[in-house]
Amino acid sequence: MILEVIATTLDDAKRAEAGGADRLELITGIREGGLTPSYGLIKNVVDQVKIPVHVMVRPHSQSFVYTTNDIDVMLKDIQTIRELGASGVVLGALTPDHHIDFRALETLLTETGHMHVTFHRAFDEVEDQVAALEQLLHYKQIDRILTSGGKSSALQAVDQMKTLVERTASTHVTILAGAGLTIETVSDFVKETGVREVHFGTGVRQDGQALKPVDTQLVALVKNK
Image 1 (cartoon, rainbow, N blue to C red):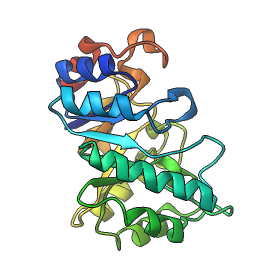
Image 2 (cartoon, one colour; image 1 turned 180 degrees about the vertical axis):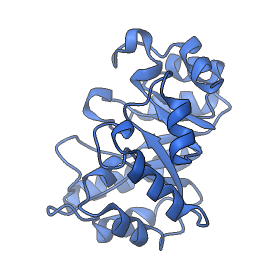
Image 3 (cartoon, rainbow, N blue to C red; image 1 turned 180 degrees about the horizontal axis):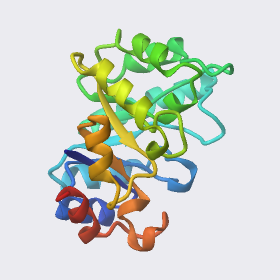
Image 4 (spheres, rainbow, N blue to C red; image 1 turned 135 degrees about the horizontal axis):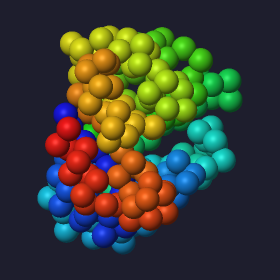
């Protein structure tokens, strides 16, 4: 099982790595679902941890619908993230009627280069996830989809997660399960759905609170499940 842990500080990143995390999702604004972190934070994390760092590209938390000005900002962010040496970016864009905004997506992908690309939980707001998945499979740059199966917690979407995993089994895309997973539930969830990668945020933070630091021991407990 591959474990991705949300980091919001350099200390978070080091604690997650020490606990055995396989990858970091680096963000700020954790209570807002994640926003693009500062360039200084990205640089220091990339330089001081050995595990892959995937950086959120999200300029605001108003919605996943982006104007041309937003896209210009995101393009610059992706370019800088790539230059700072991150392994990947985490992004997504929707139309006002909750479909994937492929025009925006294709524009953003022009700057990703050889970085890994995760389509984030904007995927959980689309009307038809299976149809959206079929469309995303056409983009070779996108190798991962972070999703809770369209529910607030992935634990409420076991059947849907299993469907998504089965559809991507022989493709270049991996389903990354996130939201609502806990140390106590992750093992059964992995067995029931077949997911190979899981994403933890508050579940590995002190007292289970979003604004407290990552707890190295909790990360290790998840990893050793």
